[in-house]
Each structure stands twice: as C-alpha cells, then as structure tokens.
Length: 448
Image 1 (tube, rainbow, N blue to C red):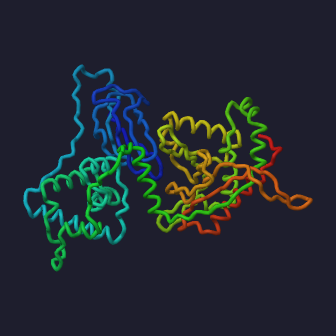
Image 2 (cartoon, rainbow, N blue to C red):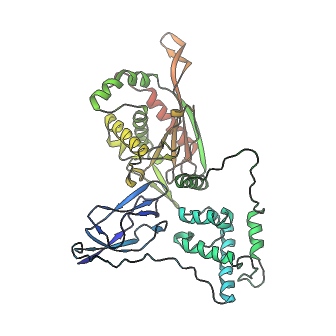
Image 3 (tube, helix red, strand yellow):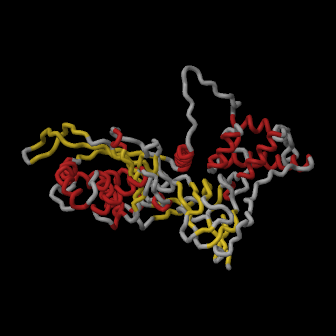
C-alpha cells in the first residue's frame, strides 16, 4: 500500500490560493478515482476537486474555510486500502490554528514593534492595496475590524499577505488590550504610540454608521465580495483610459436576421451578436498583438494564444467571465457554440475552474441591458476590455454615388478601457476603430 498526496490544484495563472468550502469525504472514507473529495472557491469560480487515486482518505490536513496556497498537500489517500478498512477507522482530526499568547510583556512589546514598523513601511510603499482572502475578510467583518485597521496588520504569508494566523493573533491581542498600549519602535529616538499611528494613517476616526429613514440592510454574498475586491484591485493596479467610437452595423444586423432560423436548424445552436463581435476582435488582435498581453514588473508578456473572456450576468445579479480558449482557431459556428455553451453553464452553475482562467482580452455587452455605452473595468491581469452598447436605429449621413444622403441605419457605440502603462491612446483608439471598421465592413452575402 502507498500513500498519495492530494494537492490543491492550479486553477489559473493569477490564482495563488483557494478557500475550502466543503469536504464531501471524511477521514476513513473510501474514495474512487476522480470522485469528488471537496469543493473549493477562488475569486473567479467555485470548483470540485476530484480524487487522484482510489483508496481510503487517510488524513485531512485543512478545515472548511481555510485558505490554502496552490500546490499545497490538502489530504492523503492510502491506495489499495479500500478492502482492508476496519469498521472503526481512526479518524484524523484536522489541525486547529492555535493562537499563542506571549508569556512575557517583552515579547508582546516586540510583536507590536514589528506591527508598527510594518505600518510605517506600508504607508511608504502603498502596500495598503494588498489582496485579502475571503476567510480573512470574513474574520475581519465578524470581529468589527475595518479595512483601514486590516491594512495595518503585518502579514507573514506569500508576498506579505495577511494569513488566518495573523488576523487571529491580532484579534486576540486586541481583545486583551495589548494593541491599545503605546510601545516604542526600534528607533529609540522616536516614540510612536500605536493609537497615534492609527490616527495618522486614517486621517479620521472610525465612527459607527447610523442609517436614517426606512432602510433594508443586505449583507454581500461571498461572490459579490470577491467581485468587489477584484474590481478595486484592478483600479488600483491599472491607470484606466477609455476610448469611444461608433459603428454602422446595418449589414451585420440584416445578415443575422436573414440566417438565424436556418443557422439554428442546421447547427443546433442560436447565432447571437456575441460571436460576431468576438470574430471581429480576434481579427484585430492579430493586427495589434500588444493589446493581447499582460504586465509582469517591467516585462511585457505578449500572449500568442487569443483567449476571449465574455462577461456573463448570472441569475443572482453577480457577474462571471468564462473564457473562449483559442478563439482565433474557431470559425463562426464554433464561436457560436462556445458562446452559448459557456453562457448556459455559467447561468446553471456548471462552469469548471478551467472555464474562467487564461483570458487575454475581455468583451462585455452592456447593450444587453439597454445601455448605449459603458466604461468597463479591466479584468486583471489583462490590459484591455471592450464594451459594446445597444444597437439602435438612427438617421445618419451616408455617402452614395449620387452624393451624401440621410438614411436610417443600425448604429452601435463601442468603448474600450485599457491599461495606460502599456497601451497608449494612439494604440487604444486605433485598435478600437479597427474593430468598428471590421463590423461595418461585414459582408451581407457571406456564408457561415
């Protein structure tokens, strides 16, 4: 018999950790190959983790709500043990995080000095915009710790992140009154009380919010909290610039109206506007590959794969972005099927972790809800996102052989937000105009 480690799987290039939502199996249970052992959640999607071996789940190493780094061993499976399991297996208890209380005042002072030093360092390099896991945020909310106060906690995790152990230790020290004392920092020439550091960093005291009038208070669900955190981090990461243009999509609209019944009958799926927009975007990305990149420090990573994310609204009102992988290798029929399959999976909660990772450019259709245009927020670590507005009939001036004339045309606004660290206005506007021209030059007699 051998022991096989069950590893927290890699869920995408930008995902460094995942939260355990539920264990479907307990220590001592028999598991089959590819059988679901637990459910996990990231800031993009919930996913199931299957067993990588058949045998008996010998040991569970993490509890529900623990945040686990990618690549970490989360459980152990003893293979070949399914037939030798006793009726009373020994159940291993997941380790509990113990909060250590300092035995002496000197140790407490030293700990707080580290915290004060970390606060000073954070205020100088802008690390207040750190990422916080859902578990840390939940603990902070339940303990009444504000975001400003959370930013002061020195993290011991990867890249200085605040871990569960860090915040639990902070909560314990705060309850015992240790945090409110006024220790001296390592610099013996300067005394900085913790209370004063807090006052300087916030600029104002935190006052409990009072709501007047007839109100209803609704707590954000987990997914909405993750979306909010992702959007804030994107605005803090990328200097956003948005360009606008409009396109005459009359030929495209008339062609779709003409073929949509035959298309559905022949291909078994509907033809919407989304695959037509994706097709135009892909063609333009090939002409302007810098749009299809990400930034790693001072290195620009140009992506050779063209993976288009499509923002999709869920029945709950939340938003998710499934990804059309290798969109440049699909014809219009393939794009239509991918768009419809991903949209259906998203709305029915059947997306896999791989379905939302690897995107290199994102399209959002704000026109679906009647908006004429929008200023979308970049989906990190991408550098651009395009929004298409509602298609409206408007009188416009067109050029004919007989001269200018006014005609009723199907018009649509397009907008694109881009990361000004990489994409300048000339490239952003040129790319956006190129997409508009692709849509305007749509051939009304084309085959699908």
